[in-house]
Length: 204
Image 1 (cartoon, rainbow, N blue to C red):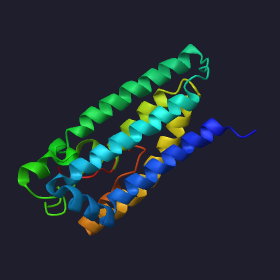
Image 2: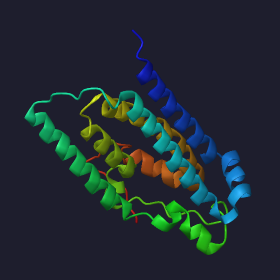
Image 3: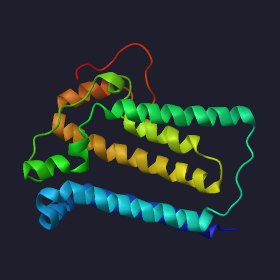
């Protein structure tokens, strides 16, 4: 029998993926720049946050009342460890990036839209020397560690699908920005499963 609640939640996630990707495209960025000028990045983030909030609220309405899973205690310890590891990775990896640039505040201060600002330096050291996308890794550990009911399981599945597709498009953008430098980094460092020893990226 078709699970209409699950299908609706999947549709909401698909709407977020399509909308987020559309605004991240060159054409979408131009639309945001026409609407908000130097606040284009900030507007992009506001739209994404509001859209994701609607997706999660829709999922809670459709699936939130379903009973949770009964996991054995060793599995619950693993879940807790995944959540703690995810938080630690997000905090550590986040230090390598400029939060003002990410949230759009740097563009407001500079009086220029995202397109005009110079590209940020490619970060290949620290956690980025072990895995190319540590922020995504931290996020995935969080959502999978939080799996305890149908809603959180569906969220983890849909978020994972979104991240994997998003990485594909993000890496195309990074290759355009950094060229052979990114190709060499990509060849040396895994995408999401960290290399604990051996060859690492270099640089900042």
